[in-house]
Image 1 (spheres, each protein chain N blue to C red):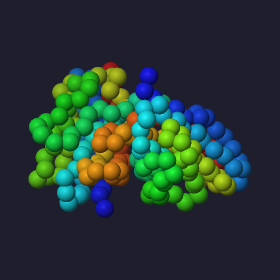
Image 2 (cartoon, chains in turn cyan, blue; image 1 turned 180 degrees about the vertical axis):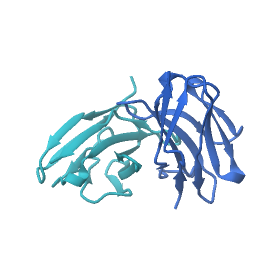
Image 3 (cartoon, rainbow over the protein chains, first blue to last red; image 1 turned 120 degrees about the horizontal axis):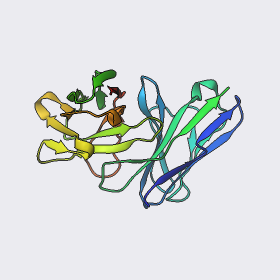
Image 4 (tube, helix red, strand yellow; image 1 turned 90 degrees about the vertical axis):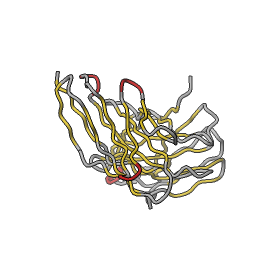
Length: 112
Length: 115
């Protein structure tokens, strides 16, 4: 089954404690993205990747890091989380020449 | 830079009512347009898309959207909503040129259908 998986689905952490949210897709897609979803603000892109070792900033990259060492994986790293990063995070992938994105199930992060 | 406006933030309808959700975009060139749906507690799923050709696009679950280039609009419609259509709906736009092109999402419209 074609899918994008994320882990964990729920995470409560404290300010400053480094965390990683994993994202994996099994569709051999080149493009992957991370979004955060906040009430009234819709989806805002954090980072995206066009292929292995190629990443770039989206609209709200501050406080986040990403890496793309393998085509299928695109982890999101919060080196020192802060309460304003409390949000719902989605990973998405997209194939070459296509336009629609496939979204993961989301990770609800709470930073206290 | 491209942008997407969804003017209706929250819509409440009774079952069997007709639905129209507005979506306007700003971008000077050709675009690809999408509507995604997010059911409560779930991830976004593609409802329908427009790349080219017939401006009236039919999607899943009886939804359709009409691309009106002169109005920079891509409104979503359904003749008769059901309680199961309660969800948040997002319009999105993307330039169609080759390679990766940034997708911009609107802020979403929450639809509540009352039985």
